[in-house]
Structures are given as C-alpha cells and as structure tokens.
Length: 457
Picture (tube, rainbow, N blue to C red):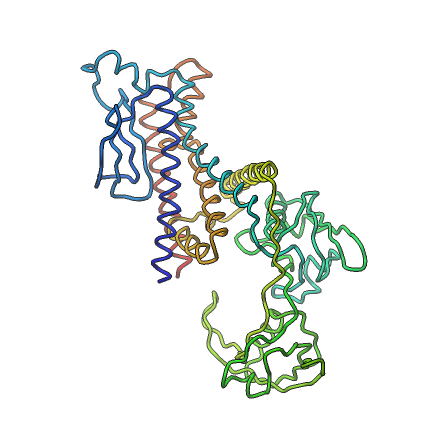
C-alpha cells in the first residue's frame, strides 16, 4: 500500500508541475501569436494524442514521464517555404527577441507562481506544526557540550527570532539556522525564557560553518523540538514494562537518579540499556514510587547497520506543542513571495557550493528520492504534501533557469546575448552548445540516480 501511495504521490506531484510549466510556455506563446503544434506531457514516443482548437494543436502523452515540451512552428525544424505568409508570421524565430524571451521564461515563472499560490493557501489556512519551543539534546556528545548550550540556550526557551527574522514555528527556526549555516554567518537567537524575560544568544559562525548541510542542522547544534513530559500512554502486554508494574498514566521522573526531560530522552536511555536493570522513579496518581525495569534486547536496523537496542514495551507521550497561525490574504501572499525568493536563493547558493566543492555532490537528488519524499509527505497530511509540491516546483523553476543549453536558461542566455550584440547566436555555435548541454544534463541525471540508489543501499 505504501509503495502504491508513493508512486501515486510522485506522479501527481511531478505530472502536475510539468503540466503547469508547459502551460506557461503554451499560454504565452499563444498570447504572442506563435502557432503551437504539440503540447506533450512526457518525452519520447507519443502514446496518446488528440487535436483540438482552431490550430489543431496536438495534446499528447509521451512514453517517458520525466519531462514535457511545447512544440511550436519553428523554421529550425523543417522547411516551411510551402506555408502561406500568414502562417509564417506565426513562426517562433520570426518573433522579436523580447517575445521569445517571454515565451521561454514563462515555464519557470509558472513554477514560481504555483509555489506562491500553494504557500499562500497554506499560510491563509494555517499549518499545524511544532512551536519554536526548544529542548537541548546532544549528538554524540553530552547536551551541555553542544554549541547551543555553550551559547547560553536552555531547554524550554521559546525562540522568537533569528538574525532579526521572526520565528514562530519549528520550520521557521530550522530554515533560519540553515540559511545562517549556508552563509557561514553567526546566528543571533532571540528567546523568551519562562519567568525570566527575553534574551539574545549568539551561535558563532565557527559553529555553523562546520555543520553537515545534508543532515539535521538544528540537531547538530544540539537543538531539538521540545516535547511533553514522559507520560506513559500505553503498556504492551507481556513486555518488560508490564512485568515491572508500569501502567498507563505513570509520569516518569528519572532513571537511576538522572532526571528525564521528555519521552525522547527516556527512549534514548532504554535503547542503550539492553539487559541492564534500571531504577525508574515515577509519579502515579500523585504518589511517588520506584520500579525496577530491565529492557529487552532486540535487533534494529539503522543507517550504520544492525544494532542491539533495549525496549520495554511501553509508549510514552512524544507529540510536541502544535500551533497553527492563519494569516490574512495580503500577509499570506507576502510571506509566500518571501518564502519562494528565499528558497530560490538557497538553492542557487547550494549549487554554487557544490560547484566550488564546499558542499557534497551527494546533495544532487533524482526521481527516486523525490518519489520517496512525495510518499512520506503524502502520508503526513495534505499540508505537508502541498508544501513539498511547492518546494519541488521552485526547484524545477530554478533548475530550468540555469544557463545550460537545452534548458530554458540556455535559450535565455542566447537571447540575452542577442539583445546585447544585436545578432543571434550562430547556428553552428548553438548546435555545439546543445550537444555539450545534453551531455552535461545526462551526467547530472546519472549522478542523481546514483545518489538515489546509494541512499537506498
């Protein structure tokens, strides 16, 4: 079922974005008076088509689903001498350079517009997500040795701004930290601390510059989503928890004298204590008590291979504080435009860092990873899925604007040179550039598929 859901989510996501991209080209071409011969979703051999409209435009579905195209009346693709003069005036290359620029740019701009519309709708509706209240947790080190602790941040702090940019929910906190990490600048974190007031702490640029951008940036800094106190919600029949006497409703206080902040901290202790008897202090119906629990050893698969972990057969509260703040239409549009702009800038920065070697080429992802994330976000809910589609739409728009021949950005480069020099790019130069561009594009596709397979393995 998950596989079918993943495939369906991927097809809907990529298929819809391809259609919108090509519709951008199609509508502006028609507006500029250019005759459109074919609108295809997919590349390669046409498997289904139908002709409609006064121009008898062929609307088609082609065999290879990763792409699409709009075929216009174009003198570069055949002899048009037999056509009447009125038809020749609708040929693409006979249009002035500004019309050609508009037609080519319309595809990526359609992707950005769709992303703005989706984000606007999400901001107007209000997306339920974790608040910006934080917990401190170490990654391979104790929590009090992390950059966040050394900067002065403490568990329970509510982050209100980072580098003067307002923060209200976890995704905004994470986004601002990633931006600071990419820019290798310090992060000034403004917080509200219960009963103490407002403070600003600085995560130094040196701490952010060394982060692995492929991982969880907040976690590497020692920052995690704040979660509720570890309240037992369910005890599994026959498990170690039931044998020890744990019950639903028990509030877990400490393990072997060490205070337990939340359910994640409790689970972490259990995982590394297989076969070891632990003294768990708890409160039941307002009364303190202590129980001895011995986690059972079980095998679990992780990114580092199969490892032995401890489990006691109990579910504890993990759901963080969730908030949903709807915006007015005007505010939602403004936030959506800023989000799309920031995402474009971030994408270009990452591409630049990959070119210079500052970021790993492992960041290049392909259809398998996109399909996986599409399935995951679809299972998380409509809001997560629409947000993912918006992000992919932005990525498609940015990638298509790169100055690589065969992509929209390559054609825009040609036409920009034509504007500057007053002459079109020589046909022979264009042919050579097209071949080089196709080779580069094929190399990137192979790299993306390789990275996808490597992640699966």
